[in-house]
Length: 112
Image (tube, rainbow, N blue to C red; front, side, top):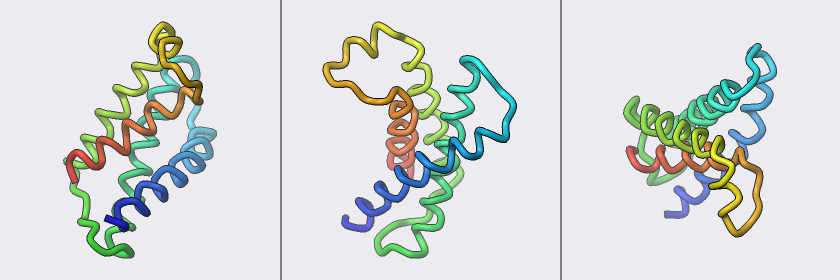
């Protein structure tokens, strides 16, 4: 259980800092940038999980189905970002890019 908590923290930190650096090298703008950002979150989360399975106890190796689940959930989070009424209805404020990031992490743990 502790291994999974450490993995979630590592995935969050790695994706939050690595995805914008990679996104800087991809020439895309507008709403499409949100979905590319979500895809990058999912890939970084999966790669950190792949590396983490070798370093942490009780963490199984993720499969390509895990990557697909992380991508789907991250895309759902990115789509939710495009609905301003939904963001306004959430009682606490946070950066909107947390939605695809949390979606990628949740998708990772749905199919690990």
